[in-house]
Image: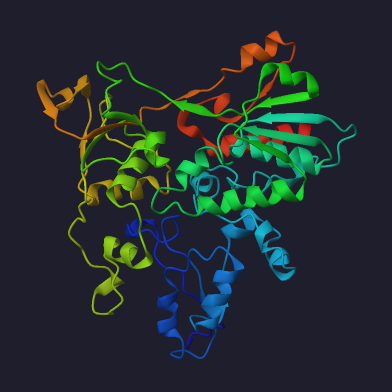
Length: 428
């Protein structure tokens, strides 16, 4: 202020701090309280920031006297009309930033053009022709995950008659599973957005409906966005009742016992460890877990808490050598690795799986055979594309458009899936 500043932006932390400050697991407006402590201490306006991703949260921050102004950046990548929609009473139509960082910050650090996972138009606006379709078509989209829904909504916006077929009772695909992970609740906002836009643009959704190849004759175009299936590794006893694929756990159909082994140490394996370690996390839980203190007595505002061990005894295993999670996001991978460490999960690499039986999971590790006496073995060993409908469609004389996980299962790349759905919706 004495140097002549006219305004102060109070952004908190950075990646080197090793405390999450902007990623999706950070509670909304999680650090506005820091700015509030400065209010009244200076005579120039103060801006607060960090994980303020919707107008309602911003209004609450201002109403609580936490700041004079609010700064948002990523939410405008997710939806450039966020303020217009808010001002005109269309909040449900806002495509909310989920703070995943996958297409914005991760791209920046990889010297790529920044964009947005939930909005592939961002920073690529001049590349797409979004004009109305010259010929109205009847389109069937099989599978209501992010790829299929994006395609359906985009095609309907351009004037096509779109029908979505989903075998489950809800739309959302893998985002339904992701939204169950502690710290990934924001994914529910994307599901809310899809539900709103499907209704707004007149997309007909058929839930609990299996699309049959003979139905293709009623449509001009068929899109296969049938997603992925969990890959089941070849292990003796894999059909034992202790062995459960990850969808069975995240859907709530299986309640995992107090001791569990997770087979697979990729993104889903880390998510499963977080889910089994602490199934919910409030703002207070977040601060305690990461050692954030508000008392002002500790330099930097963070203590060094003891690891908050999970309620369950957990093992996370992988066949390959080396560090787990090396392919996780550039700006978020360290958070997932730290979370697993703080939960006290036992990580093991170069593991040979011998069998699963009543005693648990038998493995060979570092030349020694042992049995992990667990209640459940959760299978997170990757995914395979679900293309079971493709041959039948071709036999019926209809070659489908294939997008998302059905096209390529590796890593369950939601950014690629959504972009493919958007591009296809524009090309139909």
